[in-house]
Length: 174
Image (cartoon, rainbow, N blue to C red; front, side):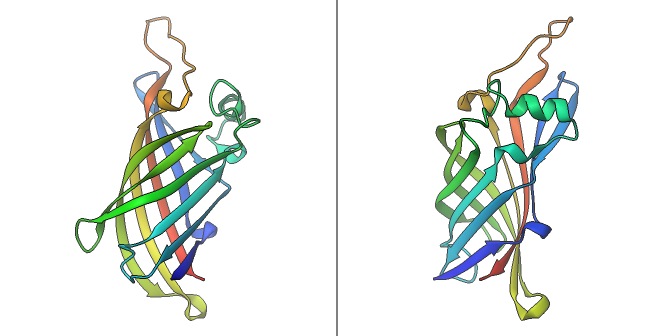
């Protein structure tokens, strides 16, 4: 079994959500970790384990970040980690995969399927093997108890239900 570790300096964990129905707010987690174990060089048998530190959330607005960490949303005091553990991988083509696993947010675990593009593996600095991936998906925040919302004066919602996930990952062979 080959172990791969996430290269945090060349990876990002981002999310997007509609704001006031007409615009999009982007955020990210600055602190995260992941380990992938795979026997096959194409990662088609990979076992993925990922976690993000909820207190590292960053939307470029301190007040909003504080609100997201509060009990209205992530409740970081009681649930400091967001986790994902893979259950299966379906290889659709040489570069396209579907990864299904359990994501746990705020103590609630749900199955999610993510679209993954495998960009390949190359020799990096120090002759270390490096693999690159782009991962996208979406989830409904209400499914995880992140239900805070309010209405605008016109009756529209302030924060959308659907969260888009956008992840760019570089892995280093351990």
